Amino acid sequence: MTISSDARVAVVTGASSGIGEATARTLADQGFHVVIGARRLDRLEKIAEEIGGTALELDVTDEDSVDAFAAVLPRVDVLVNNAGGAKGLATVMEADLDDWRWMWETNVLGTLRVTKALLPKLIDSGDGLVVTITSIAALEAYDNGSGYTTAKHAQAVLHRTLRGELLGKPVRLTEIAPGAVETEFSLVRFEGDQEKADKVYEGITPLVAQDIAEIIGFVAARPSHVNLDQIVVRPRDQAGAGRFHRTTT
Ligand code: NJP
Image 1 (cartoon, rainbow, N blue to C red):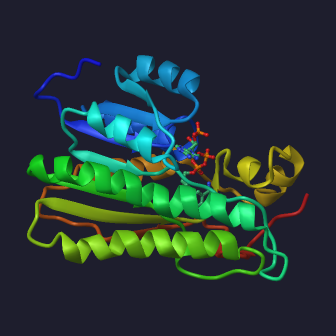
Image 2 (spheres, rainbow, N blue to C red; image 1 turned 180 degrees about the vertical axis):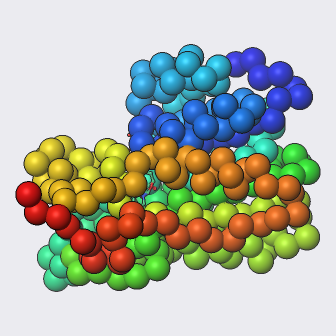
């Protein structure tokens, strides 16, 4: 990997699709050298080529993978903790422990592993920024969603804790909590069932990945004394995790 020593480096996890991919493109347009990580390296390589960035295989649930990823980064100015997602919908009584493990490993421990590994470099940059993509599921509970809502609450509290622990250090922290964004999110949640995934966005105009990417670009472009702590963003058609205005055709 060749990253010029004076380029500002932005790392985006989970950049092989959706919000992460759009964010990588936006930050590259803003002049960052963007390092993108995810498990699907073939997708990453195409994106990296288009944006003049660097593709690195990364599994945030695997300690060795995170260590290897961190080891090759010469510097880090921005970290976007985006890798994550949901698996299934079930009541607590019928909770699938494997789905819970996936959600906690990816969203919570994944964010912890990557943040821990990159924080020294973010501090050394003299003007670091950590953006964590949580969810409105980090702000409220909804029926059948406890595996995801508990994971997103935990991920958010981990992120918010750093805001205090890093006071006095040159690192800003921004949490972005989106509502419904049409990406591969629902396809992953429903194990590739396109019909079920489509139903989530039926009759509404959802957010798209670019909407979130533009917000992250705005955050990264603020002067270094300005810390946008938390941004909640939903489609106009959504007032809460389970409250939608749907038009019927
Ligand atoms: O979903 P999707 P989004 N290691 O599925 C990666 C949150 N959010 O863009 O590894 C490394 O298109 C996966 O890559 P791959 C959501 O919780 C969304 O919507 O190649 N990477 C892919 O690039 C998540 O935190 C909505 O499979 C891993 C990416 O994660 C973030 O937004 C609403 C990985 C997922 O892209 C981005 O999700 C909300 C691993 N172990 C919060 N596992 C929404 N879309 O409605 C997965 O409130 N990835």
